[in-house]
Length: 276
Image (cartoon, rainbow, N blue to C red; front, side):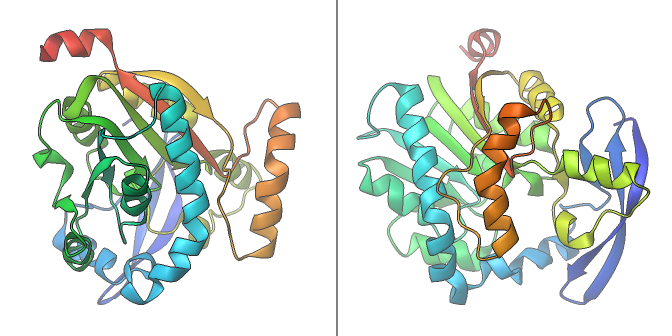
């Protein structure tokens, strides 16, 4: 990455708080936190994060079920058929909410989860859960989903390559990525600091250009980008208002300000031929 320094944010660990640098890619505008997410100390953060606590499962089910159902509906549209009998894998399943919904649709869902307690909990409900994306079987899945989870990968190109290799020739990948680069750009232009709460514990905040370049480089063809977050709920008042208003702003503005982008992609013809 050729990048410029964009500020510093706090990263919270079991042992306390660490300050890290944030960089912005000169070419694509993606923001990168300068932490090694393969470091066991850094990985320990996710064992104690608010979204991995077993006590919060019902709260997250209430907030996320609508969005997950929207993603499942998009999968049916792009595959041109119901999900009955298809084999799927969800990346970073947390509590396994997406797996429950996929099984209700008649799919045969599997998952990937690095947090051991969550992984074992979901396995206890009868699901196959892999420890990492690199051990997925080749040409096995018709659908791979990665919803608000792909920013935690230290080497995104390697992970996407593994996802592509795990897909069947006509399989699809659906990713949901937070869209905060326009906000960070505006903050920096105003001479302000990037708010720590907005950057959080993510390794990457992808721009649309950055995400598209990464997918193309790892053998995917983008079929469509959706700038809607249908079904997503947020308990905070102003965030919920923003979710409602952002589609209107997107319609009249060249800058996409949706909270997130949902990307539907397929293995490219060249990558399919190379794996044949």
